[in-house]
Image (cartoon, rainbow, N blue to C red; front, side):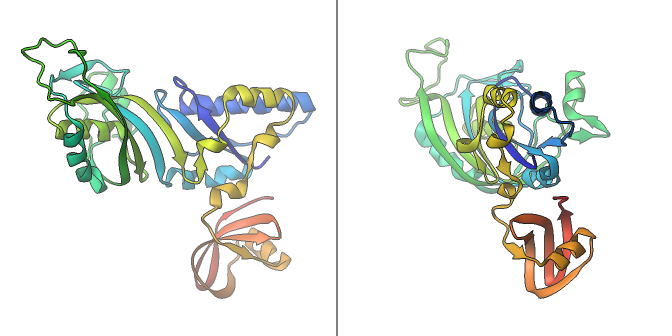
Length: 317
């Protein structure tokens, strides 16, 4: 029971609630099997309640790798609805700005290169960022003015995948005020491959502003987090069913699944013991992270600088 459960998080459930659901499933399995052992559980990257999709849940010794998931790239599908901006930048907030401008596909494609590569963005006021020891969303809910500092992120790719055209004055504006062109869009869905720290809601806001209008996110689905994709994700219903049958282990990915991009380093039993004691090894020159393996058993995530090999994370397996 050291590994990963990849949840397809449903709409309306927070990441902390998802972790609690996995803990409940593990308790159910423990009762079914009559075991006594308890397992640490953590998640590898927060998803807003509005968002759905890939949420890696680490169990046991895999929790030591949850931080690496936070630092990994993510891929999202998201929909921007044009014409209204909300205070939360998504469906859950109240409208704070409106525009009757609707962009065309050509205009959208012209501005997207501005948002590809290294960019600067201001996180949403409704976010978990700490400001003077308080969460930004707590300050925002109190009605306080929240100044969010710009941060550097990288958008590796940004691709339109679906469009919703304006048809028959669907936005409810009068003919005289509805400033649309032929082929204008009421909403667009894009796929974004982004670095850690990227806020999709901020990206949607800034794209809309660059198009001379306003917008907010109506759909957000994470389709990949680090090495984990939707193909390996399971529903909470499937997890609960497995728990009642004592079969959660069948749904888990191994601890090493979170380290697919890390080269393996074979070690001897004596070397494995030294690493478990936190000692440094001397070996062949390497550079960067390595996964020390004793046969098929992960021993430690190590970092090599020249011949010196030091433990970054040790595993009690």
